[in-house]
Every structure is written in C-alpha cells, then in structure tokens.
Image (cartoon, rainbow, N blue to C red):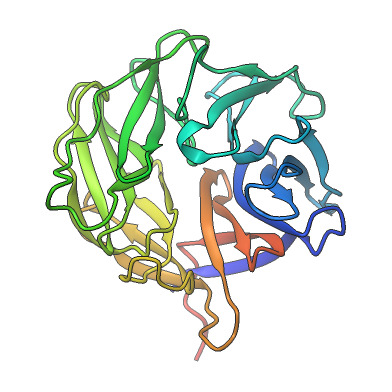
Length: 332
C-alpha cells in the first residue's frame, strides 16, 4: 500500500461555518497553494473564495479571502499555472443558482500574494465556461484544455473549453455524447483530464449512474466519444486525477457505487494501462455511519515529491495528504 501523510490546511475557522471544493497548486520546493469556498453554507451570499499557502517548516498559513463580491455566492475555485509560466490563474464560479452561474478569473504573478481584479472569463457566459472543478491541462501542442460541464435542472452534460492564447480567449468543444433517454439520473459533470499522446485526450466524469464515466478524444478535445462507464464506483461526487511522468494515472475518489451515497471512504487508486483498470493503493479517510463523515471533492496534483491532494473534511475543514506510491512496505 502507498504511504499517506495528512495535515489540516484549515479546520473550524470562526470566519466561515462551512468550507468545500478545494483546489491545490504546487509551487516547487514543497511549497503549495490551496483555495476553497467558505461561508455560512454552500450557496449563501456570504460564501467567498479563501486561500492559504504552505512552506516547508512553517506549515499552512492563516487563510485569507481573495475573492468576495457582496451578496453573491462563490463556488468551485480552480488554481492553475501553465508549465514555465510565472502567472497563476484562479478560476471560480459566481451566481445564486448553478444553472445560471458564470466564471470569473483573477491572476497573480507573485505566487499568489497579490491578485488582479476579477473579470468574466467569457463575456455573456451563463452556465459556467472554463474549468468547473478540476484543473486545466496543457496539451503537447501548447493548447489549454479546461474541463467544463453544464448543470441544467433536469440534465447534466460535459465538454471542454479550449484556449490557444494561454487563457485569454476560449472556445467550447462539442458536448460529450450521452443518451439522456436511457442514462440513469441527470448525466455527467466535472471532468478530470489527461493526455496520453499528442492530441489524444481522455476524461473521467462524475456521474449519476453509480460509476465514473469516461470519454476520449483524438483531436485535442474538439469532439468526444460517447460516455461509457468504468470500473471506478462513483456516488455522484467529485473526483480528480493526475498523470505522472511515468504514465501512471493517480485518481482520488469515493469508491461508493450508489448515487448520492455517503462521501466516505476517500481512497487513492492508480492505473498503469491508461485507465482501463485500477488498483486501490491507499485509504486516505474512512468513517462509516452512524459517524458523520464526509471526505470529498479531492483535488490532485504532482510535484517532485510525489502526489498531493486536498479535500473537504466534514465541511468543517480542508485537509491535505501527501501520497507516496513507491513507499517501501512496512516491516513485519
């Protein structure tokens, strides 16, 4: 089994009653940024975007508020920096109802100490353009691909947004084909992406059918194959993955194959065959009823030290775990 070490980014902060939907960005030298939304409750007008940083030997800093427009609920921050760039983008949603939310972006050129004023990612956006929960990826040809989805009242669909000018403008790809007449529940949302060969892009998706779904593209994300179920259980809660330099995929998810089932346990799974099969490597959290455990909405990234994930801890905090997939087995 992989070795897991855990710590809190924040817990029981008196400035917000609930927090959720974290995102994590390695800065190098074991430094990290994390962001999440926090307020009195999800969807309330006082919910803002908060950020903390970790430095070796210092732990996590006291969180600071980085995006807060009065009486406007904030949702689902996503931190992203393209390889070799000094600029960090922080995308997030705003809006009173998810079907009508839209995407803002702020940017930093000093590792997140200061941020630009917020602006709309796409003018006239309704429904949420750009990354909806998980990080964009940069393809071999330099294009940016942002995992996106649309949550209508009765149907959910996924797509990607494509940028060829380093995030200054975006154009949507085609929706992932899904037969809503036969698919159980509303559909699929919140993709997580990887590229296996130049222009060959794949996604795993949160779904309402009890299993994570998958779709593939051979043209850089412009069009996608019909969504199919995978061997990964999914409880209609967010998941995320990262592709390592050696080709392994590392996914953090709730292995619960019941739509709207409990958001526990939270586990690490890996694949060495491009996502065809998966092996469970570690359990990060596990708290079964009648205990009130929710460990959910992981964000996953890789740095020179390995794999790092942040996740929601009982809605009272954000936790961070480092996962050493290549740890030596413990002595008997």
